[in-house]
Length: 47
Image 1 (spheres, rainbow, N blue to C red):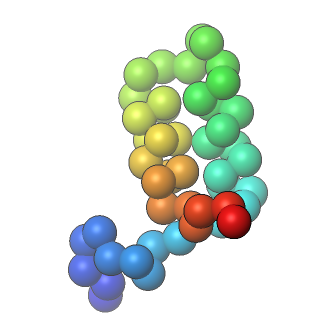
Image 2: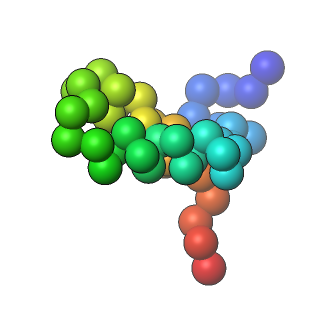
C-alpha cells in the first residue's frame, strides 16, 4: 500500500476532466470543489 502523499497516486485524464468541470461550475458545493482540487493536484504536470 502506498504511503500517503506518495508519487504513486495519479488521477486519470477522465477524472481530471470531471474535476475541472466541477471547479468551473459556480453552483458546485465547497466540498465538491475541495475534492476536485485534491484530484487535480495528483495529476501529472503538462509539459
